[in-house]
Length: 177
View 1 (cartoon, rainbow, N blue to C red):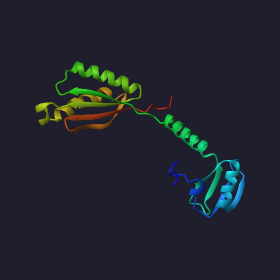
View 2: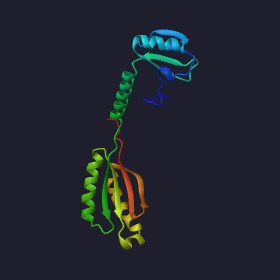
View 3: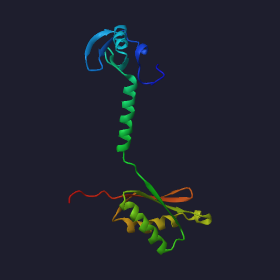
View 4: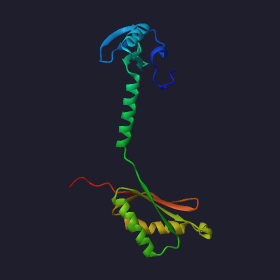
């Protein structure tokens, strides 16, 4: 296989005896021998690229492979740009947290949710608190009614090692306005 790109075969790497050949400008050369297709490509100073190996006969296109590869990379980058990036903000709490501290942290969580970010609440269990992880669950249960109007609890409070975690995502806006 070609060292340039594992999934694309070019020029002499193509093993089929007969190929359906297409020119760079879309010209149909029809079904010709591989050697004939290579000669045409060489004459034009381009590469013979196998684009449909499973077709019968395989389809090859005469093109500038470097340019083709560049355009593929460009397409990948464009697709990556359009992907939605989910940002997760983490808010740490403890079992012995005062109500005003909970209010303060929930205020921040609400700001994050308004900006469309996901929020992960974590209650860290220290020392003997590990014996009663339900205390951590209770702290998170107190938070749910405070954020229900703006966010949806994706993962209910659950215990993971020394932490009790809960994931909240922003509510989908209704487009009925």
